Image 1 (cartoon, rainbow, N blue to C red):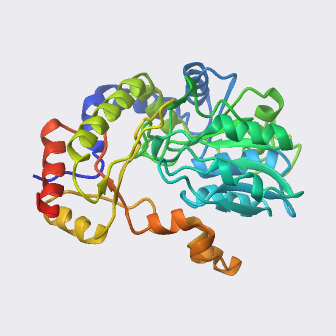
Image 2: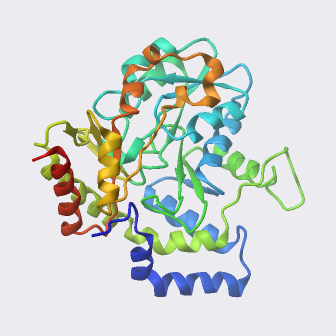
Length: 369
């Protein structure tokens, strides 16, 4: 049996008539950049998410950058974030001229360890960017308490956590803004790069929309120097077709995760991902820990036709990009140790029971059970 890590083809086949018709409308109307189809998606996403504003941008990385810039964050500022994430989270901080300040991850849930945040706050700290990694909400209530105590902005990186919830409230709605990626493999994915910002702050929304469109709120008039980061019409209609299905897809991911966990929970040396008790995990990724021999297991599964991945091979502080900072393994021991243990198994709504059984029985075979 061959099991891909993601299966976008099966999803497309399910939606093909609607996707093809929607894309043809964009072509017929030559509505390729911004325009009515983008506005329709922004309104639909804001309504579905329960926020006042959704601003479509070119990708999830730009979403973070735009918010940081419009909050006035720049040189000599510091922004606190997690040691384990995709580099978009930290590189956007650096792109503003500010310095990313990393915090180690919590052992169980892989998100920022909120108990370590306060010791990283300085007089230059302006914001915190928690990441709801793998689809698991960070401990956002405590992040907000700390931010309120120190008068800091909170920008939620929800690139992997569309419609995940913490205490019944959707992630991305706790801080001043939430940012999303619609990269094709995400729970809600476009057919290319795409992203969005959500916020209830009217003025921030206006500024983000203006800045992402060359600093212009009216064609030909440019209030500031901006950037070119606009959601295009083709991606918007793909997302509009998919949006009504996202809650069902998230539930299917959750159900598949429970099937994985039930089959893996008693295998020595294999640690399934726990779900935070007061959170709704949407399982963008299903990440296990392999206490010893992770690379050997990955090769074993590959030879059996099972595609896996590692998110991420190096924690952010240990990337070459931050080598000049001189970080040591002892600075972020959990993130450092997990680099060689984490393994992402195939996860998507269309996984079948037989597929999950094949993956888990293969892991049992590798262990020798």
